[in-house]
Amino acid sequence: MSMPQPEPVDHCAYLPAAMDPSALSLNENPFPPLPSVQSALVEALGSANRYPEFLPLRMRSLLAAQLGVRDEQVVIGAGATGVILQVLQALTQPGDAIVLTTPTFDGYPIFAQMARLRSVTVPLDVHGHHDLDAMADAARTARVVVLCRPHNPTGTIEPVADVERFLARVDPGTTVLLDEAYVEFLSPAERIDARSLVLRFPNVVVVRTFSKAYGLAGLRIGYGFCAPELGRRLWNMQLPFGIGVTGLVAAAACYRAEDELQHRIRIIGAERRRLRAQLSKLGVYSTDARANFIYLPGGRPWREAFDSAGLRVRHYADGGARVTVGTRQSTRAVLAAVSTAALR
Ligand SMILES: Cc1ncc(COP(=O)(O)O)c(C=O)c1O
Image 1 (cartoon, protein in one colour):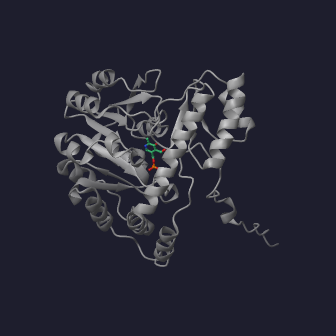
Image 2 (cartoon, helix red, strand yellow):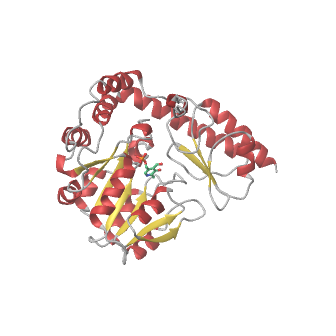
Image 3 (spheres, protein in one colour):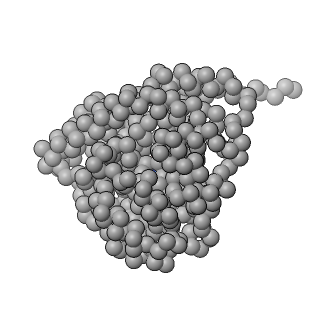
């Protein structure tokens, strides 16, 4: 008797749609990769039978040149996620403490658990800002402290001078993860000079990603940079053949298309400002978000409003909601959903 053959599955049918105005829960970029980036990727796929570099040296040089730092200051991972895990694996022991804010990016409690760390949480204030003094106090007995700038989910940024004061208070033996996953959405005046910061504070690792402003979340490309000595320690944890062949070409193609990408970033920023201004007209408070999302604190029936509008946003236990900024179509749908909740 012959075995029944499984039905052939069209796995492409399960790929998420590149353009989806309702997909507002993961802070993805609403635009598909630029044609020039897609062509470079197609070319890279032609040699998919070959391994990538044993360690991503070319990618490291590319990123270092772009950042204006030395090669040995850079580490690369499968998204910022991969870099963060690499840092935790290299620098912590099970049972060490990690200071996180609450709420924070959902990944952090998971990474802490994977590295078997003890999470010590410090609440944000009602406007979604950090209590940097309380974080520095908590960091006294911790191995790692995480500061996201802009923060996820509130999108807030702390002033540069406050961040520097905070860093000066943290013991040099405690690593600070300065998570800049959304840094490209900040204006030049809002940014920290991270290149000089890591030299002045050799315990700081700056983490960035191609997932957000560069719109390549599906390719999993992230990087970190820090002082050379720490960089060399982290590079020892670089996974052999760990960065796929598409990473290097996609990153290079993005840097070649910087003007077009900056244009898209400006569109997203303008859409966020428009959304916040319209919310304010509706009498709805949102935190002072500077990235590609907005945050609505709890107190109104956000879940009901967004669910009934068919919009996928990120809900929090206290009733707050984080909404990714998409195209104008998404903005209209969000405003329509919010006005139903605001009227209640
Ligand atoms: C603050 C923050 N850090 C890190 C990440 C991880 O990004 P990725 O692993 O896609 O690079 C995210 C993703 O949402 C984030 O919001």
